Length: 189
Image (cartoon, one colour):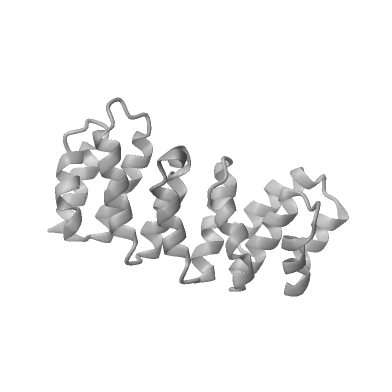
């Protein structure tokens, strides 16, 4: 069992009350059984998350929709688990979905994990989405989402794309972003 699955198992054990259904979902190798959990009525969220995570890590694209919903969840631990599974899933729809979630202004409070996933994916959608989101954070007076802006700056630095130079220069004028923006600009050369 890898570290990500162990962390998920510890968290979900409490939610499930350590039930027999939890134990079954944790150990089953039957992908059909796991996929069934995603479509059955009245399954608890912990069961759907376990099934989606295990299917996603196994490369089964039936988990895609459930993982995208979890990526946009208000619980950061669920978002992180979903991002890990989505990165392993290698579904071509993932970058577009992550970019849509990251740039949705109505859900900006939950954009941190999609931003980090976009950086990890290094997809064509990554740089434009991070630039868009960072530009919005910089132009919104008193914007409370500076951690999202910081993740964008760090992501753009890691991606090393010259298209980000202007927005990174703008970020360097913001005290909470200055050091990261300067480091990102240095990575651009």
